[in-house]
Figure (tube, rainbow, N blue to C red):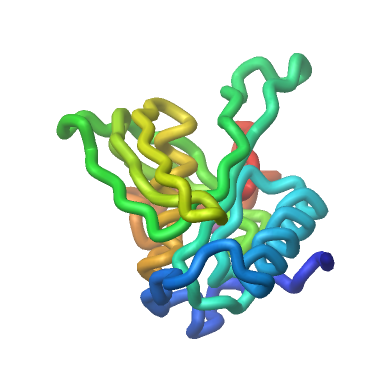
Length: 175
Ligand code: NI
């Protein structure tokens, strides 16, 4: 287990489409997931995708605990999601502030589907099939975008709503 270096925007691997996982519950997959949690926790992130630590595989993790000090941050169940698929429930979208461990110090206002249905597998190959809305849905869309080489700045509609956290307001976790 180890905290791994997080690649930052500009690294070409972050723009690549990641490969599907073919075998579950292997030593290397479990070690990857352990490193991802160590790295996400060390950096106080809400989520992390494998390409962010240099592994081009379709693996994301996320999770946010409710914190009474930040009542505006909604809890998100701690999840390992492999080979994910997302379908919007309807066309409704909403803007929200996002950050990313690969885009340190910055925040941007990003439109995301409000309600989604997502599917995938955990590290043992057990299916995951959930509906999500709001911040939970936002985190899943942000993380799964990483697997297709999309960083959130590419989704910002108005680049005036993009800048350094210290110059903006809004408390969000990096993803
Ligand atoms: Ni991110």
